[in-house]
Length: 252
Ligand code: 13P
Image (tube, rainbow, N blue to C red; front, top):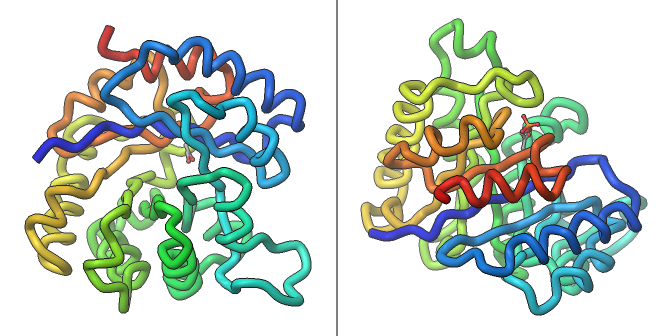
């Protein structure tokens, strides 16, 4: 089954509104001729509607870095899935390890956020990944199994067509250490078979599984060459339009 690659940039808590507009505008210009690939950027919530204007009528899609699962209400400081969608986003990154680490996002909370995204027609990018300690203790698959199973608990196959999975080993994020191709290959194959066991083979074959963690122009081609890698979730190297374009354009 052919899966269109997705190269996604997670801008984390970087860039003011004007800075986000500037980078997005440069990216639109650089990416005009890119075909057969989905490109997404996820600026801060504040910049979503601004960047939506910059990428309008281009081949660059927008995503949020998080959302809150309630529809609306007295939840000071939070933003709902419907608000994100209305701001122009199509994707929502959910369960990023920085959310899990610094903001208490548990698998149960991640599950509620996934459901909220799906109910609004936002494509969720479910992030999973083990810490160095968990890998050293031989618990990588156990952790990933729990993050996927609990994150998708109670969601039926019909609702899940737009799911994207992102494997981001915590020890590779922002560290310059990339998982080697054998490690990535092993985990991505495992994740696809896990999806097959939880849902179906047809579904598992259709889901895009991204790799994230110190992806750069120098390593992206090797990573994208791995059979079950369908794209990348890029942090630091997505902040500069030229560098990010070199990742997107890895094939040329
Ligand atoms: P880096 O590419 O900076 O390692 O970040 C990866 C990441 O967390 C993307 O979501």
